[in-house]
Image (cartoon, rainbow, N blue to C red):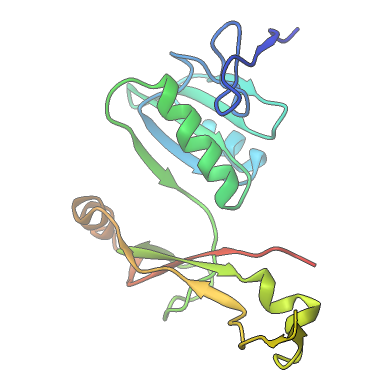
Length: 195
């Protein structure tokens, strides 16, 4: 049975027993060192590497959290699905119930504009967000000469690209020492709204 939700704050709802609304975590459920993956099956496979069987928390919003110890260190492996909104929910909600510094690593596959080969493990030193501009695909922009309210609309780019956001250099350097990794300059986060 799930605790009743308390919506005293519509921007950050929590259950009466202190669980976050989307991730379903409360203080003590998530370690400060976290590995995120997209697929719950991958999280379960990774959890087999922990020192002993983990505690498992699932949420009605698709998050699965497995917390245990790896070589004596508290670690959480969290399946968060994919996309920026899921990462946003995860980071904000877990930050609210974890005290002290946090280290979050995303372990998964992604698209990239680099020399990387399929199956290669890459370490990025920066990231950009590529986001679909839905206005470019709206009926009034299809021919870029359509008129809206009697005025010609200017051409609209189909995608927007954010400025580059650098990764923590010490973390990038620490992970890049392994011989199986390639170093890539930019990791692409792609958010697409499908028609």
